[in-house]
Image 1 (spheres, helix red, strand yellow):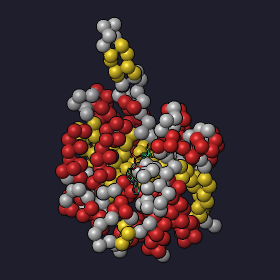
Image 2 (tube, protein in one colour):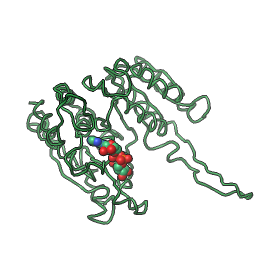
Image 3 (cartoon, rainbow, N blue to C red):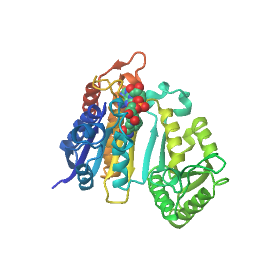
Image 4 (cartoon, protein in one colour):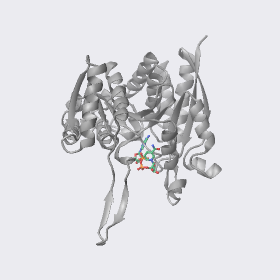
Amino acid sequence: MSASKHILLLPGDGIGPEVVNETVKVINWFSQNGPTQFTTSEALLGGAAYDAVGTPFPAETVTAAKKSDAVLLGAVGGPKWESLSIAQRPEKGLLGIRKELGLYANLRPAICFDALADASTLKREVIAGLDIMIVRELTGGIYFGQPRGVETLPDGTRRGFNTEVYTSPEVDRIARVAFELAAKRGGRVCSVDKANVLECTEMWREEVTRVHKESYPQLELSHMYVDNASMQLVRNPKQFDVMVTTNMFGDILSDTASMLTGSLGMLPSASLGAPNTPGLYEPVHGSAPDIAGRNLANPIATILSFAMMLRYSFNLKNEADQLEAAVSKVLEQGYRTGDIMQDGMKKLSTTEMGEAIIKALT
Ligand code: NAD
């Protein structure tokens, strides 16, 4: 009897429903042709939820997400909802679901498909074969630390302040995520901090070193200051295997790394919490209102997010490899969507790209 897994779909806004639709076709293909059956259901999130039920983050969505084995999200947001209050904005739904599921580890791979190596702003030799994984701590650090705010001092001067704060268990669990990933990849972790200036990240460095020594001595650990890391990512990104860092440094470094590989339309992500809680998988891009509803969006970022789901939530490594190979094959065949278009290539719509990937799987 084959195992069955349930995936909650949150198509969201803009191009979200279009890219999720193509991914559902891929999910169904694996359900029919792989060892695991997948069932799916849909729930509301973001602007679509606000329009339907008056809140971007309905309670039913939280319940459905917690009951699922994994969640696939399209994108949320768009100009239509920009004038709403913060509490009603689509982004509230995104932050809400991350918080409710306790997703503390954000995995952002930066992979350069050989067929796209000439599409980057960097030279082919710098990025060809690139395969790095950035692990960003997602629920702590300066974005959440207290005290925070802006105050007016007695002399009328305004003073703004935020607090970088981590506890040792928070560092311990994110370090373990990075080491576990490295054990299945190149065996190397680079921890990024600013230990020369910030006490909090000095503690981060000590804790990562302790976890390494206690539990993963067979792997290689290095440390790098964030200013150097940002420079090295552009100078020689292939020196890295897994990078692990704080919420704010990860926010910035993962965006730098994403541009090494070309278009936003190619970049998947995963956000993971405690073992046995559902992970959230989503493309890095937003709802792209400028191309929404026109069958122009690149569905590959979302399809590769499903590949991450196969790998990290369902432990289906072969199937994840198979799907990534199918994407690579389609690109080698010269098929492109508008965002990754190059001279002499064949331009496909969103649905045609989905079909090409299914064909490459069969
Ligand atoms: P965006 O990622 O939506 O778009 C940036 C540019 O990239 C646009 O020109 C768009 O057409 C293009 N693009 C993005 N994804 C593409 C794809 N799959 N295929 C082809 N082209 C693609 O960022 P933005 O324009 O800054 O934001 C638009 C809306 O999305 C905003 O409301 C923003 O808040 C929201 N947003 C949501 C998320 C999310 O849901 N995780 C992330 C970022 C932005």
